Image 1: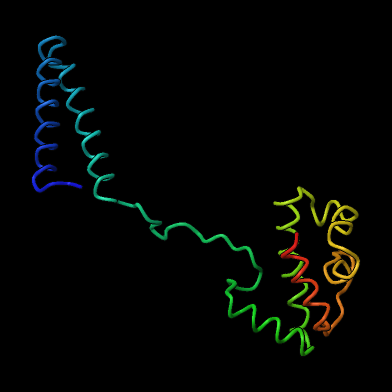
Image 2 (image 1 turned 90 degrees about the vertical axis):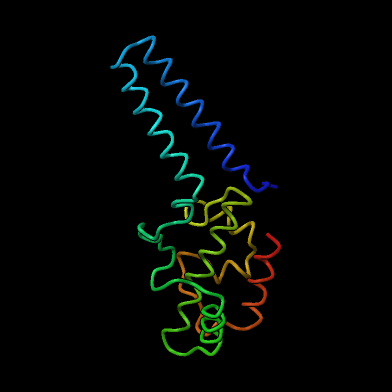
Length: 161
């Protein structure tokens, strides 16, 4: 734990070291070397102060967020809605579950088994099993509405992989 005043002592010691280094540079190399040393010491001091103060330690929000899902950002409440709509078979909403299940399976197969769902469909089908493969096969249109037992089997198999 930091004791009161320890930060001030650290700054005082670092300042003393910087002044001694600058004096040594001036004595050995002359004014030009002393000026370069002063610029270097200043730059290091500014970077250290920014680091210590936590400047930009969090994302400043300047970057464009990475979009992994086509329509909007995913959330757990969103999944509940998508599953409910898919089970009810309400129009186009039932088709939302198919690409999301595919992405989940593609990620799981890639990270745990080094198998690509899209490039190695035979190996993926062998790992997943025929019941679930009918739901996530990239070359087929999924059944709409998706039967509840089939969806439960898909979720259970995803957890097993």
